[in-house]
Image (cartoon, rainbow over all chains, first blue to last red; front, side, top):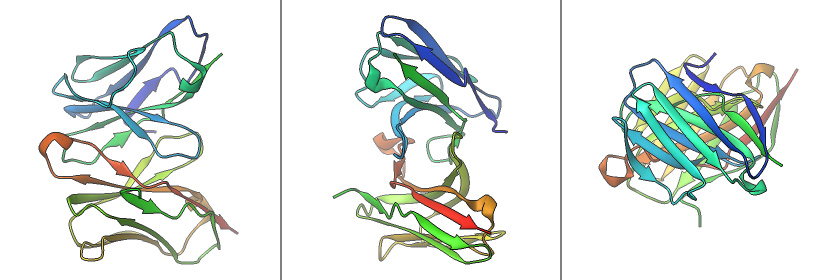
Amino acid sequence: DTEVTQTPKHLVMGMTNKKSLKCEQHMGHRAMYWYKQKAKKPPELMFVYSYEKLSINESVPSRFSPECPNSSLLNLHLHALQPEDSALYLCASSQGGDQPQHFGDGTRLSIL
Amino acid sequence: QKEVEQDPGPLSVPEGAIVSLNCTYSNSAFQYFMWYRQYSRKGPELLMYTYSSGNKEDGRFTAQVDKSSKYISLFIRDSQPSDSATYLCAMRRAGGTSYGKLTFGQGTILTVHP
């Protein structure tokens, strides 16, 4: 079991739906990340939060909206997604930007 | 040219073999080097984390960094079927505006057969 917990594990949604992905860590880490991973590809960074503030947005479309309510929680709000957004969405955390990142097991998202 | 190159394999070895996984990179600003293991339908699991050049050993795993050649390796001794997974190398610059940004290799698919 990983120390970064992601829910739900699987999500199927239509293109007009609104849903949220959740990530939680209790390691006291101050940096949290969202990644997108397509099959047989490495993870691609989407967002970085440092001390609950958004520090990096890798030009992600606005239909993905991150939120960091506190130092332990990270959400990714989804709205009007496209079929090409189907992927594994991974959350990671680290003590700081120069410390190793620990990943959760991801949410497998399918867009109908 | 990608910043990090990793042979995607697949690599198939018999149980007990020594496995060598490699990545080359072009950006001399990379200072932190990592190896992750990813099982099917799971997230990447951190195996090794090294800073700058040198060797680091942890059980059956040895990570090696050669900054002069821009080359990193992961050796797995006495490989087991449970080592069958995708292995990702990752690296990062130190500080600055690249805070926390990892650059991954493409991943090598490894199968260890009994």
